[in-house]
Length: 411
Image 1 (spheres, helix red, strand yellow):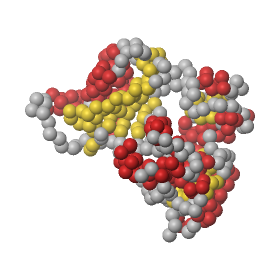
Image 2: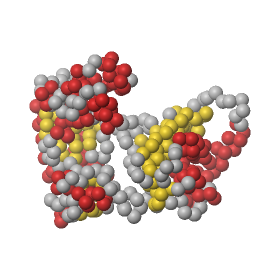
Image 3: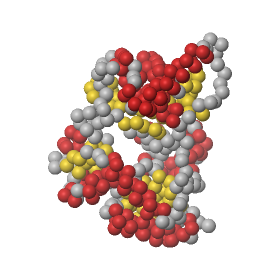
């Protein structure tokens, strides 16, 4: 039986929800932006009119206003976005229970039971109509025989459209496109491919798997499979929960960090949440990763292995801070910090410890963290904290918690 895969992408999702909730915004150039006051002032989403004016996701608010002087800026309403995402999923479930989310506004659907690509196209049209009539929103749907081409199809024609890519026409439709149009080809991969003279998806398909493996490791084999239309990855069931691959917490500070002490305090505060979430998921970290954004908006990322697995916030913060001291050069101030627990394993995993390791001391620390967790559970997150963290931490009150799953970028 021929596989039939759909990829449904809700057009300009955040902006469309805002325009649906406030009809006065319909047809206007609007951008959903973070708070300028708390230093989260970037464009999260934009309407089609704003996009045509040159407004791009990730732009600073002031840049967006320069590109589009008539731009209407609105704050995000995440509860509404989550609500309409759930409602869209309910529409998808009418046709299949093989529905795999790819972010809040995109989903793959396996409708192979429809029997053919034409049957899948009929379902795509029904979904498009239902979303428009029932939710007041629009979707673009890609219809194909694998996930990669279905995703690419939903991007080719927007808004409110259906694009079909088959085994017979993919070379004509897909191969002339820039390699960056294909999912999993990000800026770094695109730059490396370009350096080797590979500019289109067709160029990528023409490179041998062995050559791509030399360039990109095992991931190069995947790129070749995607570009040649041979992806066979399945769409997961709607109840499938991906295993957590890393847990982190990041923040854009209310003003720039100017010295090591300020950076350490922020890392220690962020590590409290990381440690708590490790406990919730019954996991422990085998490594730590930090991400730093400077006030010139350049970013740096570093990571290291830990000498032992841990859930303890102070150990996670200490490892992150050591990385910072060793790797960051103070040529400019720090605007944003993220610390992540990586190489996760079950919390009861046995390990070989050093003969200099103090089991008793670490057990006492673990019991202390248990007590802190219980106090915070009963009396609130702010009920107990480190004395060093009291006072101005240069952290806004609306910090976002980030749990990163496979193939999902943290914000």
